[in-house]
Every structure is written in C-alpha cells, then in structure tokens.
Image (tube, rainbow, N blue to C red; front, side):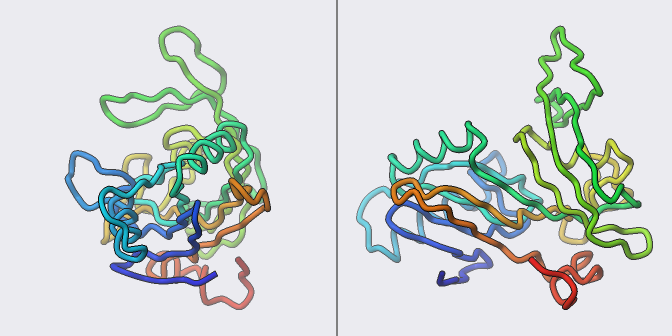
Length: 240
C-alpha cells in the first residue's frame, strides 16, 4: 500500500471504491460551524486533482472521528461502496482499534459496559450503570480495554469498541477514573498544547465492498507528547 502525505493528511490506501486516510488532530471529519477545511473536503480535492475529475467528486462518509482525535478513516468513492460499508458498520462487521494515553492506572484488562445518554445542546454524554429509561433514551455502550504500559502517572491503553456511541471511549475512560490526556470535557486536569486529546484510531478492519477480501489499515500514532513520552512509536518493545 502506497502512502502519500499532503498538508499532514496521509493517504493510506486508495482504489476505485475506497479512500483510506490518516486524519491529523484538529481537523474536522466533515464541514462544521467552524468553517475550517475538513477531511471530507480534503479528500474530494485530492481525488479531483489526482484523478483529473471534472465537476463534483463523490465521496461517501462511512464513519467519523472527533475533531481532536487522530487516526484512520475510510471514505467510499462510489455509492455502491458507501452502501455496502454502511451495512458492515451497522452489522458490526467493521472492527476498530484505538490507542489512548490516560491518567492513572486502569485495570490490566476490562470489559466496559455502560448506558450512554447524549446532551446535544452541550455536546457531552452521561454514563449510567443500568439503562435509566424514560426520556433519556440511553443506548448501550461496550468497549474492551487492555493496558499496554504505564509510566509514572500515565498509561497507554488499547480500546476496542463493540458499539459506536458518541464520545463512547472518552466517557468510558473517564468513568473508570482514567480520563484521556487533554480531554478537558471528560475530566482531564489540563489541555494539551495543540488542543488535541490523546486518543488515536490505530487500526480499521473491513471487507472490501466489491472484492470481498478482508483488509486492515493502520495509522501510526502521532510523534509528539504524550505519545512519544510513552514510547508508543519508538520503543522496540511496542508493536502495532
């Protein structure tokens, strides 16, 4: 797979149906009220230039990452691929693996199960141990957590979500007393200089929408604090 970097966005893979990118921190996945250049717009501009396409370029959004989060995202370049990938996502056939640097010492392994209710006005979620019912309309959230290493007061964890709720990983880490570094919204004590949070979409596994073969894409974690402080990239003992 050929990688290409432009304006800090990395092209991990592309073919007639897929465009897989590594999103940098601070870039919205899709256009929002900030009017900042989004990854979707970047992808369309990239395809228009690289494939010499006249007129509008189709690029289907399959899934998203929060603005302060980095990592792998897959877009569909045809409507057929968009429909089939959306079906895979809905049927939990797309596997996602994240890395996070958190405060504190989480358990070595845990299955995190909560019920999530989102306050859309404040853009924040609340977690409950049981379904609260009523007007809250909470949805079940499930994540597998694995501790990879701890250095002083910080820990590197692997997070594999079984569900895809808003702010699921951020809120669940905070709920167990281990907020993600830089995530002020969910209890981190201080921000990171670049306003990111230490959450990274490391790996994405899916079935190709037309060829049907299983494909896995990996985006390496950022090479700045706190990632490089924990040796998430350069430590020979750490493997992606």
